[in-house]
Image (tube, rainbow, N blue to C red; front, side, top):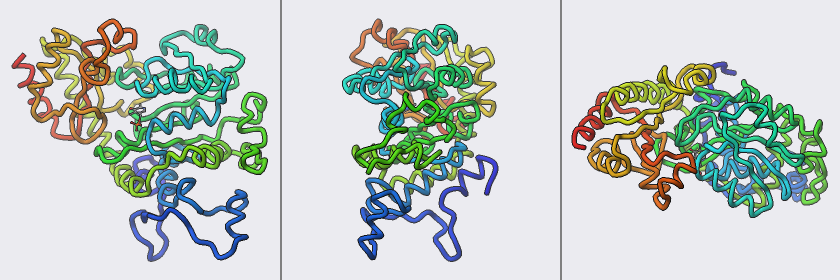
Length: 425
Ligand SMILES: *Cc1c(COP(=O)(O)O)cnc(C)c1O
């Protein structure tokens, strides 16, 4: 229907027919009524399309998922209750007990813990790699039971840019898919499928929602990965599911096999659904995503350029700055801009960072990122406060790192607030 992502974020998904509501309706119903037992039986056999229980599927959620899928250029998508659920499902839909996978060590802390600690208890082992390693070094980390490679387009909180094409090639050489968490870039600034990624995840809580309103997640499948070509590696997708009348997902549903399995099996059993009401709010956020992301990026660039010139600033990391170590990757993958998040430090370590933050007036200290209101977080004082400086460095987070999420206010006002706070330390 529409071609550019700026139009898709407004018009894809719910397309009203004559006389129908302009906005996506909220199907605030747990269940759906059928006239005959036979009608409903076919749904349970996955022989007919339709809704029966909102834990598995709900029309509002499906319309919003379809919009995100269209924006990413995928064949199908599902909404989840959070970004954490999306990343868990994305991996667990491929890996079983006894399997192994690879993930970048600079990913979001919540995902790092999920992969390294919680999934380990399920018998799924994750090896973390440095995303600056060479192809040969990464190759050595693969084992016969390695089933997937994971990375983030722009890492949270260190804002490093991921070389999607390089890792897609490595993963495919080993016959496994590449999963990319595209939360910070959003499909407005980067569409990982165009660079060879197979599956994309989102914490929709961030820019997609955009207003700090609802926690949510999404998984999108490109439909490009051929599970059947590597059938012995992926029995969950290529062998009969006894818990679903012996259906083989990749055979029965073709390119939709991965999303169908995640819905019919994982959502059925774990139930981490997004509420239809939250999906409605998410859709409102998506409608303005393109204009907001553009503004987040232009504001962040101005703030980054300002910070770079300040004597009291020890360092700044923002890939849209020309001398940033990730600028070349940013030019390739994020030509329209990276995102509104940047990392920097004030001179004087933890104590000065705390003083600086306490003098801010417009900019708020919150455990959030990527919404309309400028906010910041100092991992050493907040999310990682139990850690010593040494432990922080091991986790790849500098003790003085401040994560600044630049909002969509007037850039002058954001800069003025930083200026008055810096003047007081
Ligand atoms: C926030 C975040 C998550 C986790 O998402 P929630 O919606 O908070 O569960 C995952 N990945 C990235 C990159 C994030 O920023």
